[in-house]
Image 1 (cartoon, rainbow, N blue to C red):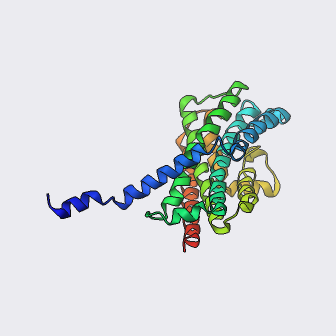
Image 2: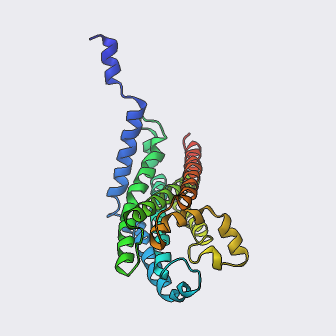
Image 3: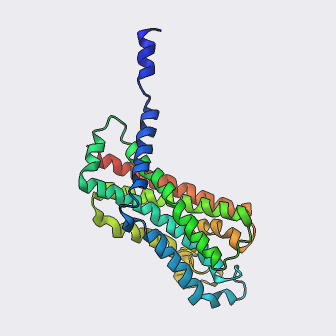
Length: 269
């Protein structure tokens, strides 16, 4: 075997190096969950609170003629699941901000790997973190009486909606963390996601909305995402409802991942 061939085998490719570092950063984020429960608990507590509060206090809304769900919990539960997963995505951005403040991010920049791994790692961690609120909030909602009419396909489209929203939320939060480099940006992370979710069909369908909220919700991409995730709780899964949600998720994930990568350019000297 020639020296050139040996050298070629020993030198790792950029792809292997990037994926290896990204995987280790994602694993580190998961390991830190028990050590920093305050950064993860809100992704469970607030969505469960939303299920209990909205499905109880606003139960009468489901009696309005033309309301698409059998009960208010069937309308609220998918939104709460998506919301919890979005919070899980934002906590990865907070983790990046904490690493920047503590100096760990600067040490990562000295590693012999392409900087893109420093974004791909937290994004991967966000997708994995979201599985916990997805499973727990969904289980709580089903135990509370939600009707899963769509069966396993209904669970599948809800998972797609939740994970796609997680990826977009993580891109948004990581991008802000890289630009501001401080935990003080947390309120801006949360405000952005709250506005996108609650200025949509989060609480009621378009058919019973009026005024400016109806106009905003009609063009808000989150309306299509929630429609995608709700299918199994208000009926069967259909392609005409599925594809607009997939388009909205794809566009949001691409735009906000690009936002995070551009933030990385500002952070890397």
